Image 1 (cartoon, rainbow, N blue to C red):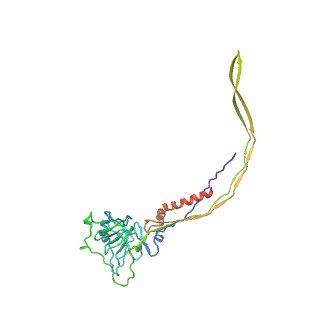
Image 2: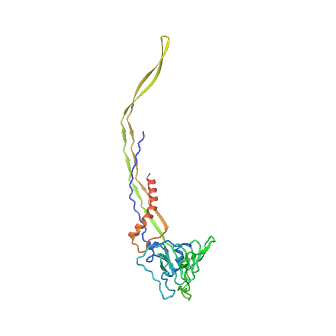
Image 3: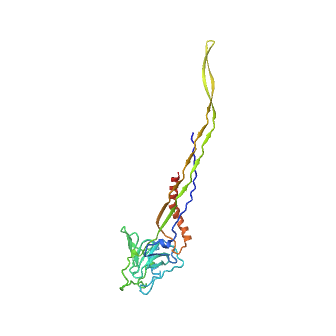
Length: 312
């Protein structure tokens, strides 16, 4: 006979999670772009009704002048959701009527949208994150699969009137350094979450010796026996039941005690790097911690399973 002892171990777990989004979201030389009114991260695609209005919305987005004496301003009030970082020296604006944050270079008129698509306002050129191209002035587009068309074919009213529109000009004078490529105006927000599980000690446990008392066990066996008898020259067959009882004694026995020494579970550190839309840089540490919770539990779950396996 075997006895099994199961110990329930309670571990006190502590963790430290980085919660300062402003310091970790963008690499050196870039700033989190979360301008006032930017509440969307859904970038319009070629062929959608919203894309037909992209050029007019860009021109309505209060684009700063390319004059060198005009310093681009970043509106930090009522900052919203952000999904990209912009080069610190560039403008971070809200795309009119679409509530999208975007990076803008006032010298080249290049722009970068949250999904990585980019273009130049002065020429109307546009390239999607997937490699599709379009001319926002004429509307002609070419997809990577070779398909061509015009973004204004189903909405002629959305086509910009370049004869009456005032397009921003590119800065052509010298002395401002090399132009930043449109693809390098910004980048995705990258957050790093670090979860630390400190060392934990499992206390020693002892199972005391146990004595099982003697016991008496009785067993009864019933069997049938066939008897044949000749009566008056005739054979008579009958069955007789035979019952036998056996009594046995199981002597007392002792289960020896066992002791498990104290053990220490080593600490562990888990780091998760993710790219996503995050709250603005002005978010307090308290609210930032709440936003990190879903990411933390995702990374922390694996550590808990590892500890349970070690304890088992």
